[in-house]
Length: 79
Image (cartoon, rainbow, N blue to C red; front, side, top):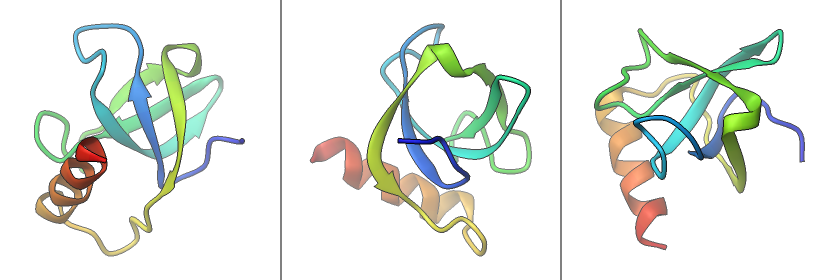
């Protein structure tokens, strides 16, 4: 499965390992990820593609706020 904008991923490495994030963009082997709490949509974290694992979920992030993103990711964590 190809990483695309809106894909829900899980961080495998770093201080945020095990956390659920949404991809806000990709370029040159790096993805920009946000979770709406520690990493807002306005200031996403750069993460190497090797350090994230894909899930089957995709979120439409065109008109989403940080609060809605937190709610969606919390629901996915509990599944």
